Image 1 (cartoon, one colour):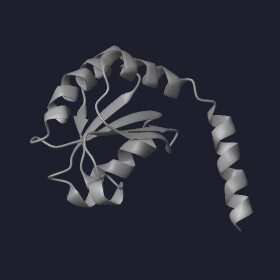
Image 2 (cartoon, one colour):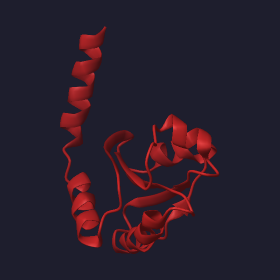
Image 3 (cartoon, rainbow, N blue to C red):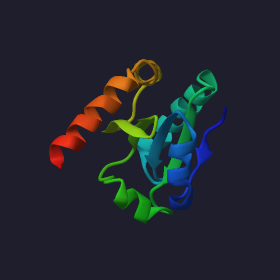
Image 4 (cartoon, rainbow, N blue to C red):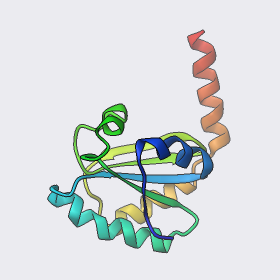
Length: 123
């Protein structure tokens, strides 16, 4: 599957409608972003069961601000609507493949249980 470009209007829907979503926050003027783009694209072809989305931080400044993006590229991973990874910096192909496998291997029942515990403790 190819990467998709998403806007602020599409962001929540993309996260909600897909089991695993990797989001690359980037900008055209960013050298490391341009270096990471083919790695991200290649991963999208290698892992068709994962949704790969790109957010142009110049065009989507409100979304970038809401996501707390302070450095680009920043990669975020969502699993079952939960942010499970967020880190600035470009990854190489082997590191990205390892990260994708790690996200796929997360025990989401445990994650949801931890979130429920945290929410209960906060009330």
